[in-house]
Image (cartoon, rainbow, N blue to C red; front, side, top):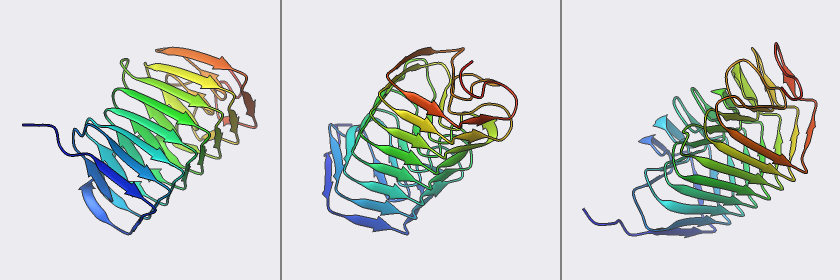
Length: 220
């Protein structure tokens, strides 16, 4: 099978759509895909990717808002299995029944720059869930606030075993109702940042008022 044709969307609104994979958009192994100046809201995927599921693309979301999207599984707003760049965008009030309320990164790379992740929720990784040891996630000059891990691991970010870089960013009022918070990197610890199974680099960032029920309200 050949590479699928890329997708480009600009100034588009996609709302109220439903699917099993990718409530609004499903991306195959495209060479390139982009979403710009668009709104994706209240879309539902029963399995993966409330708004968008990527199965191996290099893709970008720029100057866009994704809100109120949901899935019973992985990636309340976005599921990435390739390489995603999220720039000057907002992920808010998205929900995953399992992992990654805002963004679930299964493979490849993810770069989040000048963006806001707020009010997202999941069992683990309210804002972002970084899944694989082959994954590299970078968060630059972004705000991660008021996200929730409803079963305890990683209110802001759950970095399971991959590499996570946090630069010039703010984490505030993230919560995990059972054990950890702000950034969580392995079960049971980390209100602000906890890293056990992966590589974590933090520079020039602020952590405030993140809460953990048991271990590591600030940094562990």
